[in-house]
Image (cartoon, rainbow, N blue to C red; front, side, top):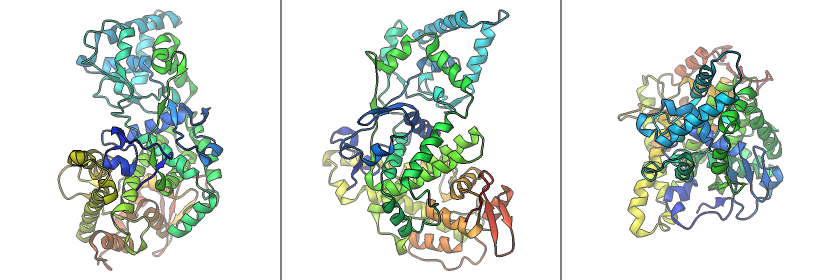
Length: 532
């Protein structure tokens, strides 16, 4: 059975009864969008945290990670930023979600801000409208939700906040803002549903491994030429990723964060004090947990995040790639963990599954069919893993049918398909015949995360895409994917299987054709060092 990281924090009560949570950790959830995975991951990183002591660096110290205490829950203190969300989102929200107390408090905020703004001419209202439009422009997710349940694009720490849910039915008769503050729930995890917490814990779990264990794993799985000598050292990787996440939050001009802090707590402090503290002490919330055995996929995720953080790209592209990396990590986590419990790998495959990628137009019928079969096989693998006898035996019989139905729909194979469709890894978005494909965004992610510097041969690039993400892109790997998905290994597909992939790389400007037998894939966002 999966054991937890941190050790001993699996709940015996209602929270962890679902079989999917027992298998994958608390929790990956279908209602959490891909941008909200990143928002929540960064929310943990930028908030003040504690394990056995408090700290405010993005990651715990290496000593804490290495000697994580038994039952040492990771807790963090997220900021609600209700004033900032109210100021930014209320005017763009649905009319029926604008409670009178919210509108009254916004008028109060406007008045307080007018008193603090100094301008040469009497155009303070124009300044306020400009500020409102500025922050509305950073709207990230939840535009159809109540204003407080929305999220900003996490371009700086001042725009990163925890989830707040307005309990409208309970607050029907509330008449003033101070009373209304009692009806913002912050512990429901509906949209910031703990997926980002799991990703953060996976990295902590991975970085706690010994260098010897990391090297042995890389040798066993054929990843030694994928990771640099430095990257095989968790001490070095911890230091670099900690610095990279710190730098990420400093890329945006400090003016934006300062303005956000001014709106949220610079003119009216009582709201943030009520939402973020209890009697003057920070209000902490405990993270969930991840499977302890998931450290290999967590280690790859840490390497990929570090490579994105050091790439020479602008902030918005960096955030886009980090969002995609979080989504791909959820898919990798679901598939890898399921493979550990569903069936033995075919021919020693590592990872123990394959995502057969077909050309976007679906013109190669044989590849198209293998791709469709691999989608079905991933779904079945996750479905079967949830019904492993050791997991099923822990589900109370009266609740078994209900909990499995929920697991399949919101936490299991349908979650895998939902996220893959959101990022364009599965097409079509609706209807049957689902198959795996790539788009330009995913291609960019592969180039930046698989080529840390300089360039790689085209064949090496395809091999690393298979080793990191399970992507089958050419005839040999598609043959392995067919063997895994159907039990039949296809030796020849009779026509080119990856010509479309070369064309896509060339159109992106990252493929250099040297000869018919050799091409190079270049990471133009690297520091220019020679690749392998």
